[in-house]
Length: 251
Image 1 (cartoon, rainbow, N blue to C red):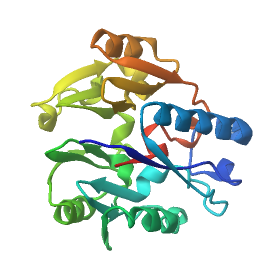
Image 2 (tube, one colour; image 1 turned 30 degrees about the vertical axis):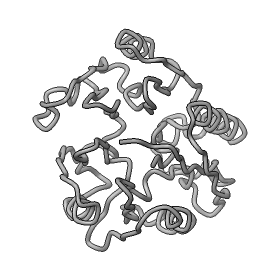
Image 3 (cartoon, helix red, strand yellow; image 1 turned 90 degrees about the vertical axis):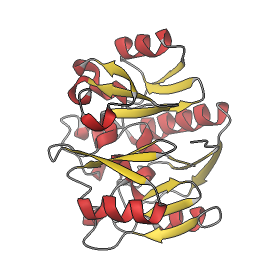
Image 4 (cartoon, rainbow, N blue to C red; image 1 turned 180 degrees about the horizontal axis):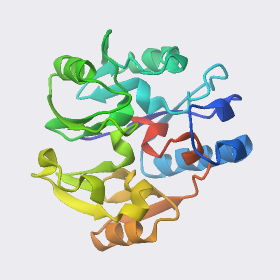
C-alpha cells in the first residue's frame, strides 16, 4: 500500500496521565517526549512523507497516539470507537483532517476498534481481537473499507501491532509469539526474538525502516534483508505503552 502522508500530534500537557501500567510511567519526561516526537516527525519527512501536524490536545493524555482513532485504506477512513472512554473525544481534529483527503465512515456500538490492532497489506488487513478491538469492530471495518479482514485473537494483549509490522510486498516483521499463526502462513516472515518483542513495531517506507533504538538483533535481521535502518531513541513512549506506529496515521 503506497503512503505519502502522515498525521501526527505531539504529546499534550497531560501526557504523563496516559493509560499505562508500565513500571516506569512515573518517570515520564514530557520535554524529552516532545523532543523524541519531533525527531520521529523529522525521520518521516526525510523519507519523503508529508507530515501533517495537528495541534496538541491537552485534554486527552493519550492523544499523541493518533493511529488508534482511525484506520485508512484505499481512499477511505474508518473513524474508530476506542475501548477506553477516556480516549473518546480525541478523534475530532483527525476526522477533520482526513475528510480533506478520503471518505469517512464511523464505527458504531457495540463495536470497539483501534488502529493499533490493524496491520495493513494491499489486499487485506490483519486485525487483532484484543483488549481494545472486538469482532464487531473488525466486521464494521471490513464492510466500510471493502477489504478482506483476517483476525488474530489474543485477549491478553492491548494491540496486535506491538508484536508485528508490515514491511510491504507480503513481508511481515513478527515476534516468535505469533510466528506460527495460521493467517500469517502466506507471508514472508522475519522473526524477532522474544526478548526483543518491542522491536517488532516499525514503520517501513520502501526499503527504509524506522525502528526504536536498543534492539540490536532485530536491527541486524532487517539490515541482512536489505533494509536501511533508522533507529530512534523513543524511551518516553513505551512508558505509556505506545510505540512507533501509534504515533502516526499513514495514508
